Length: 255
Image (cartoon, rainbow, N blue to C red):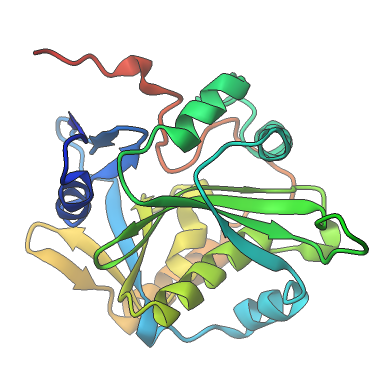
């Protein structure tokens, strides 16, 4: 299911749709609607109740020197080169693997809502900014931050957990901005490439009765299962993540 985001109240429409499970791709809001399947579940972190695990605190300490900057949604060659390295290492056969620089610019810049690119850089050693090691295209909604797409340098062994650090930073930003939630997109139970999302507690999922929190016991069981089934570092399945479309060519609008 999809609809176009346009008009003077695109932000309001995007907010309303996100609360019923839609995600944004450029100027389109979409939601999986598959016959006899409801595996894709929208999840969000309750930001002001979040408590980091020991592992998450280590990730925060390891990357605490990074300089995060909220930038206008304007694509750069530096960002695109980082995305290419990330996709080649983590999602070589996914829908985004064939993106060129113009496609990337469309993804970042074609937004009818309040969006930013948050860049994560190593400390500067001179007048030039430090090396770009991570970035996230983020929507600011009325009730939270929606992480549209994040990517990072996959070859920095000294910064293991960099993708998780970007989520932790968004939780901190939400709390500081008085926003109750961080939307992480879709989670599919048992899908190895989505299990990192279940590690953020407390977490809510969208069901037939609306947003409902995972119980502590259920989430702990899911986290333990994710830890046992985690793939070795560097193993990729060739797919994309979060069901993110490769572009807007798949959407066909009718007047």
